[in-house]
Length: 211
Image (cartoon, rainbow, N blue to C red; front, side, top):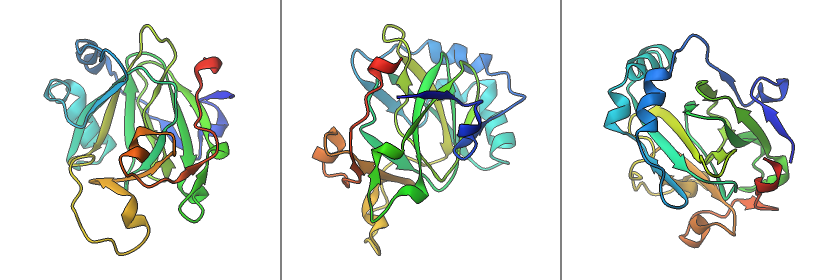
């Protein structure tokens, strides 16, 4: 699979790099958190990260004063498994290089997205990258298995916490698996086995041989 850079023109529909931020205080705090023994961990809000200088900058500058949460996704991963989207942009920052597997919300047809539509993008260490609300994404992929990845995740406060439990009014409502989180799962994924909407068809992409 071809892996583009977020600085390539192919990335323009999916997001953008944010300029003017010195993320070193955040990276230092992220590096104190050990990698999980296996797989991927995610916490929507981590007090040690929200205590850094970057929390206020993301809230007041990048999100225009809206209340946000600053958490992290970290571990080791090379597979797609699922795609999700929110009603707003997400900001990611990695302590090292990492790769995002992305698609566009308008590429969903009758509740399903063909994984052949997905593109891979390499994100440089320390660069804040905005992933647009209409961009489908999920867990980052590492570029070095030994080092794994640590990627900060900035979202509006409450995102990815317990789902509201509302009665579905349409098909999309059935994809809601957490607050502000709509999920399309590949049939091979553990999420699908746990009852998530099966919304990905085609190969469950694995970039292990491409990195």
